[in-house]
Image 1 (spheres, rainbow, N blue to C red):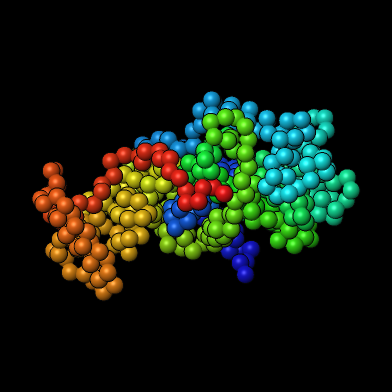
Image 2 (cartoon, rainbow, N blue to C red):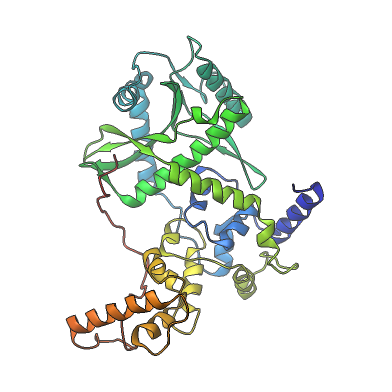
Length: 408
């Protein structure tokens, strides 16, 4: 068990790392982003210290592009959500009846944020959420059927975060369901995989926080369903449609990532005692580089330091960069080979395979043989013999691919 002295020492180290850099309060988006690359120690340390990474990115000379949403997108999302909840949640009740078998006429829609005059504090909204959920769990006759704008508390590396799901379906067949409302489209049963993945990660954070709250209320955490209801626009219209998604995988990843933040002392133990990120210019880059990163292209849509880490990953190693810059599928296929030059050397036989690399070497040489058979010669502009691994030239283009079996 961690002692109070140890906890104080960790807090002191994190404060030293942060210095005068502004802090950032976590919300569901930032907590969900933690699960996007759970193996990155750099992100773990920075998030545990509560550092506002956009400010740090500016100091590094790589201003963040991640996180911006256009006013049009925000406005469209607000209009769509308001339509789903209008008239006492008529549309949302219909969707819950279709997807979960809920009674569309039972119970009220209770707005936690606007249930009384005046603007309640966050702790008041948390108290109202707890009360509404407890009454629903007890099955009281006048308990709410839908909870609008609930607020859930969650400790993230010792810091209190407040998370606001779009809505909750209360006590449908004895369970509580998180409802996530997004304005992107589901077309012929399929959705943009990037947007879908982001929505499910965010919903998993809500499920995790709700299960924690249920346990605090003395309820079995399993009363909170690991299926969530995702409400989106149908095809090219503004008509809402709902699907039920299983978020158990995202929930497990979120739980592991939060546990790792709580165990940040292991990461801090590998850093110099005098290290701080509260420096400028080249010193900031040197300080951040002391913490290992695990860059992959997906970081561009999930982390404010992605541009700095990408530049670092491209320049490391003798072979022109880290294989992580080529994507998670390539990195996984190369089975622990971290440098592009090593992969190219294995492909053309200029480096012998080390123990454990035999299968990867055979795969690369087979790929080279197929490439030679198809092309008959080196591709124009190739600077190294053998297989031409794809090299990153910029942010990945937004793709729209159908998921296997659609979102349902």
